[in-house]
Image 1 (cartoon, rainbow, N blue to C red):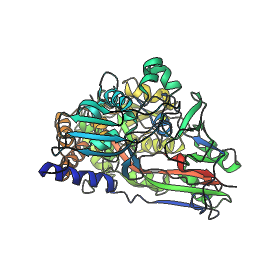
Image 2 (image 1 turned 180 degrees about the vertical axis):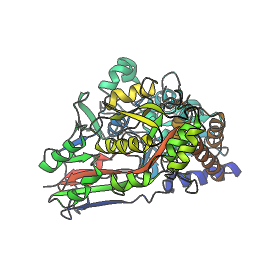
Image 3 (image 1 turned 180 degrees about the horizontal axis):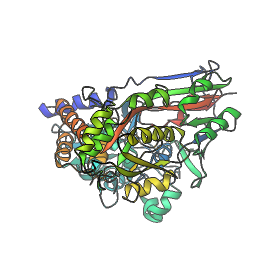
Image 4 (image 1 turned 120 degrees about the vertical axis):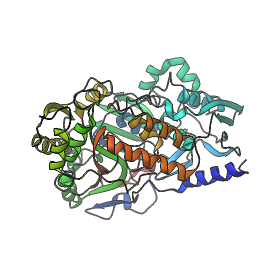
Length: 531
């Protein structure tokens, strides 16, 4: 039912979710190369073949949709599982739910399931959906992302193909949230039989691919799911994800033909790859961003004037030009450019005099020493860190750069056992939804699951605004709330926002149908191999 005043607002919300752009981004991508083939090639997709994909991140957190904390795992999970509602580029579309309706007050949602099977041949039923969504909403199970399911009250099986979800209160991002990976539909019988730990190593989903081999920090091999509900897809027989953390090695393997696709191409190699015979480069707008994150529990970083001083001492424009080669935009937000991004909020200008003034008024007027941890093997983050070290040193802050294996570093950082500050690989952080709710909660709410992305930032006014935005379907009110959150975040600066970045991938001419969604992953079900 969609009648009544609230129903009309909910209809408008759904229309916005289905059609709205991602924040202020243009949502375009450019694909160039030595020839006019590759993903731009016309023709009938061919079935068969193996895609070898060199990745900057490994699925080391496992392949269970519940609680995967990093994109290495998340982007693989998206190839294996489906949700009720799915992201397609910059819009939402039906997934395992072929249709849905909602009550006039926007608090009762009824989903009709399509005929689909898991990769073990068992049907996807309403009981599986109930089991999966209840896990998504349970903070004891979904410890990292339960805030996104906190509005869910009950899940009821109406019949084997119909599920009803009742909300405690109106949730302006409900459809967005159940479209994320953590709300993927899993087979109840399998999870209950093997348990979450074993399921993470050998998962069963209804997505286009299923796991054939999973070796942490080495490779993950996926094979076609013969029961996939999108007829004719996937086209590939097999996908081999190789973990290649060094950016230059990934690029060399692409050039030599050892791999078909490589992500995280260094910005300084984009132009040379564009001119290489048989290769293509995709530079795609994304919901990713790059920051220097602070542990705000540690002195003197618990002092906002210290953090502001470091922000003013950061030469973003210089780094954008010399390290990113213009492939990005100086950031004016602690989170990426999602739906309600406000371009009127000002970024921090490079102002060393202002930085010195603020530091002189802070709890560390004579400067201090700090440890900045960076991911080993990431040339971009290393170059950025070296420039920042030099500039921060000029105001009296001595930076010790410590390269570390990203997996261990990220785990330590989230638990408060990392350095004073940290930065992460370019593909490591992105919004998993098209709206602000998820990534804003993870960045600003220490109780949302990831300790404010390891910064432990905690501002009660911001957490109230997050709840206010979540609790309305008035799009203009949500925009106002998120604009305030953005402005306060910039003032409190739990991280120095550097850039809104792009996804840069290279692939060989024989790879067709390759694209990167704004949320970072690739719908490999659409990829096929030419000659």
